[in-house]
Image (cartoon, rainbow, N blue to C red):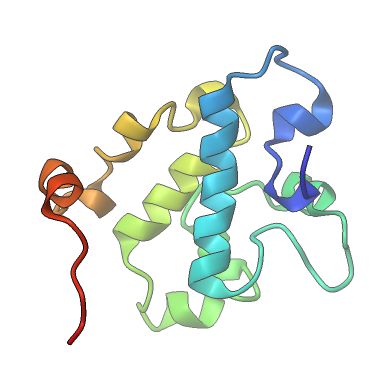
Length: 130
């Protein structure tokens, strides 16, 4: 099953089975994006090691999640987090699977990826730093 902080809420609750694989994977990818951007999981605190319990307590449903999260609030205050990135994370981390981004194709239509030419990136090959 994997590490609990990356698991979608429907897996923890054993609800919505069979789980829609892409929706649960999108949630896990959202957690990974958060960790890569901010260095900590979105639903983990020093006092509570159970990521799922922290998720239930902090349900990310608005930009206020970033305003009050202990690891993002200063970046939020200083306008260091692009709004499009925060909206992307919120769309990926919705508690209700039907409200979450449903596929990679839908993910790539989010504003954060608007400047990405996905087809060109897939055919151009790797870019190397000389």
